[in-house]
Image 1 (tube, rainbow, N blue to C red):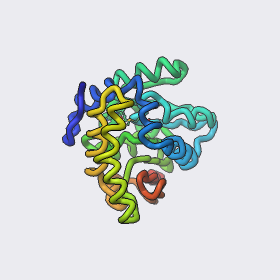
Image 2 (cartoon, protein in one colour; image 1 turned 90 degrees about the vertical axis):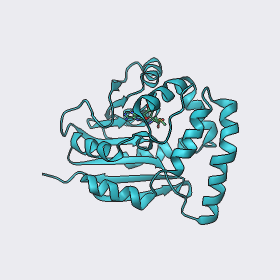
Image 3 (tube, helix red, strand yellow; image 1 turned 30 degrees about the horizontal axis):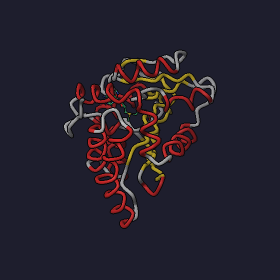
Image 4 (cartoon, rainbow, N blue to C red; image 1 turned 120 degrees about the horizontal axis):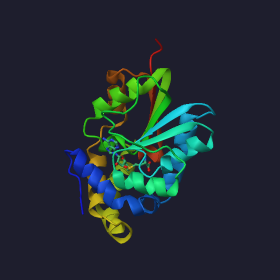
Length: 232
Ligand SMILES: C[S@@+](CC[C@H](N)C(=O)[O-])C[C@H]1O[C@@H](n2cnc3c(N)ncnc32)[C@H](O)[C@@H]1O
């Protein structure tokens, strides 16, 4: 069983997701206490996919995060670097154009997507800033980015309770439902290590995104960041 460490070596991260692929979606639902579905709806609203648009769902895993954009009539490309997650996705959604690719070296031409989105993926990418620049490169001028990621609860007492949940309650629950419980130790550690809302917004700005803003979900357990690629 593979568990990535906080230096996020790409081969370790990919192998860890290969291990959890089969039970990934079920485990998500259980560990998020059902919130995962609400977060996905909020992402769908923020992306606001329309028929005819091209949407890149980066670090798409099994493609569950890509479904709402396809349902809205957009052409969605789910892209991931875990062969195990891609295989599971292709089994479930054979009609989706799954693409193998690393977020820091995307196999797409400049400016081809109207919107690039990434759900619960950016935190796992070792070179965050390189990924933010690659996402900008493949987005058309005037196009948008939407990032859904675990973040920092805004209210201090809630932050403490949540931190306890992550470090104490989550590992035993993960042992009961996941095929690789150690992966959920990495999950807890990587959430604690991740930049808070203003810090991630600053990194989006530094990568070249404009009109950067965010919205907290479930008190800031998750944040939705968005930005626009400057036109011309
Ligand atoms: C927690 S899963 C999220 C999957 C999906 N977006 C969802 O919301 O269910 C994170 C995914 O990020 C992928 N990933 C991590 N680093 C990546 C990278 N550098 N390039 C492409 N995919 C990556 C992993 O393989 C994994 O499938």
